[in-house]
Amino acid sequence: MATTIQISKNLLENLKTMKINEKESYEELIWDLIEDRMELSEQTKQNIAESEKEIKEGKVHKWEDIKKDLKINV
Image (cartoon, rainbow, N blue to C red):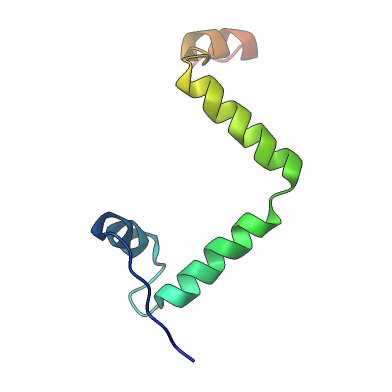
């Protein structure tokens, strides 16, 4: 049984850009997104949330410091 859902134009545009090819259905795309989300462990989800919070708070490493720590010259 098919049904319809309402989404914003912004979400529709984002979904369009995520399609692998033009023939991919939105249902296939949504199932892929659900599958990806289910594969993340709770710890990984927590780590991602913590990282996002730190980024929003401006707690990020500067590229110059990273290069120095890793001893790379790019």
